[in-house]
Amino acid sequence: MGGDDTWSSALHRLWQAASRAEEVSALADDVYAPLLATTGVHLVVGTRWEDRQILRYMRALAAGSDSPVITATSRSVPEAAVREPGDEPVVTRIPVAALDDAGWPEAELLRRTPGATFVVCTFRLDHRGWASLGVGVDASADVAAVEGRLAQAVDVIVACHTGILQRGREARRGADDALLAEASLQMDSSLDVEETLRRVARIAVPAVAEGALVHLLRSEGPEFVAATHVSVQQRRALEEIGRENPWLAALLARRGEDEDTVFLSGPELDGSPFADTAEAADTAEASDASDASHGDGDGARPGAAGGDRHSTVISVSTLRARGRVVGSITFVYQRPEARLPSSAFLRSLATRAALSIDNALLYELRRHAVLSLQEHLLPSQLPVTDQWDLSASYEVGDPMLDVGGDFYDAVTRPDGSIALLIGDVCGRGAEAAALTGLARHTLRTLLEQGTDPGTALSRLNRALRQERASRFLTAVVTTLAPRADGTALLTTCSAGHPSPLVLRSDGTVSEVLTGGLLLGVLDDVSYESHEELIGPDDTVVLFTDGLTESREAGGAFFESILPVRLAALRGFDAAHIAESLTQQAKAYRASGQDDIALLVARWTGVPPGADLLPHPLQLVRTAR
Image 1 (cartoon, rainbow, N blue to C red):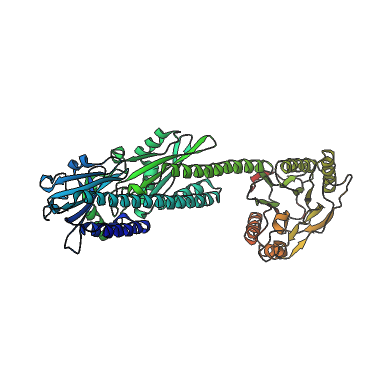
Image 2 (cartoon, rainbow, N blue to C red):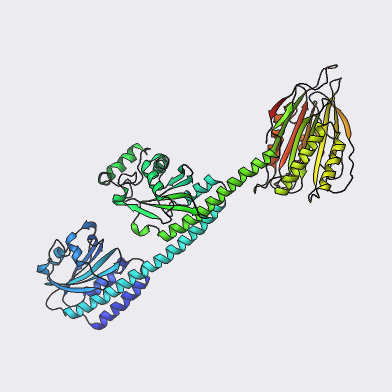
């Protein structure tokens, strides 16, 4: 037989090749050729088995042949199950004549060669299957030496396969960690519940699975929110399944609060929209040809055999955060078992997704609570007569949605005039909200009783000082009193607040010049009034500094262009002016997050000599 030195050199090269190989099959030439060079060996043949009896691969190389015979298959060989080894390799000598074709697919090849004995080593590669490496030898072979060489070659193959699996696990672990980190960043970047759920689905496909469905748990049961799939056609089918399929709804209901991820496949999917049928597998090629001829249809069943022949597997993970279930995520896999994610990875992804979703849910609850509180700090209705066109606009500027300190109101007075008020409490939050309520209701009560603007502001200042308020606020109060000649007298007092603007009927814009000290800073402060006349179709605009301090990227404030933008709104009603200025300021600013409040009053005028007593009032809902 071949010399030991030659074999030792070949074995050394085999170990070197094994350290570099990315697949065990890459060792074939380095294994088969040295064995075939051994005295008495006429054929080398290797097999790869899965699930005890499924022949996946067979490779044979005969003496004198330059090319191997390779068979890739998925053939079931039930009689081969008895050959499955335990944890240790097993070397067997069997006469070729005694080999049964039913359990030995190598038999046909061995009978074509001169060898009379088959020496074979069976060994386990991993938990999914086993392999064999054997040689056909004649009487000239040193069978004991051949057995030793087979065992040494198998040691290299097993070590190579173990190393490949280890490197694969490490690479996959690194990829999983990177995916989890990216998933956290993506999901945490949105505080919108449905957008967060959609991101959960998009992040996982195709890195984790071919398809994903996400459900949010509501009091009445699971609510479908998002689905995605690598195939647009199957994505539509998944969306329909997520919304309407009773099998999936029942599965999610049964899962309840179970924290473990469950995998379902094969018979467990019978009756589901994910079941693989024999007919679908048999007609897959015809189905593909039909799709190519007629285009994608809407009725594709996720999991039906199409371009990918792998059986469908689904997993369901419960999304739990802070001790409560917030939803579930269902993954649809159409890939080899080796590429399915681990339960630990899915639990980690589900935990991160659940926390992001829970944060978004908490944010949504807080947003609703803040908006509700904000609404109660503002008037729900504004008074309107045929003499006045009133409207307001309010835009929340803080993305964290703390309650703002901006407020406004409009009240009718005993003498037939209308009082407009607007103010801004320093800061945000609960304390600012408390002062906002105090300021608005104090001013409203005083003005409804007929108190003049200056006195109303002074009494509010006194109330703030008595309450030892830790924050200051600004405010402006304007009364509009009709006159017999069709004009109206505008009386304005300001406590450190931006001056109102007047848009005249001819399109000119002027500022109401008035000023005074902030409220809540000093005791016994008095405020002077400024008076001027406005005519029919003149419009008075009161606003908070959130409007004027909206800043573009270049640093300019909206205040610099406000008169021009207001002049361009000549002829429009109060509602259009209020909403337009708010949206323009919002679009203008690249920085600045203050709330914007506007109160707009257009004087429609009264005929000379008309009755100036209060007209019958109606209430209209204001924009909040």
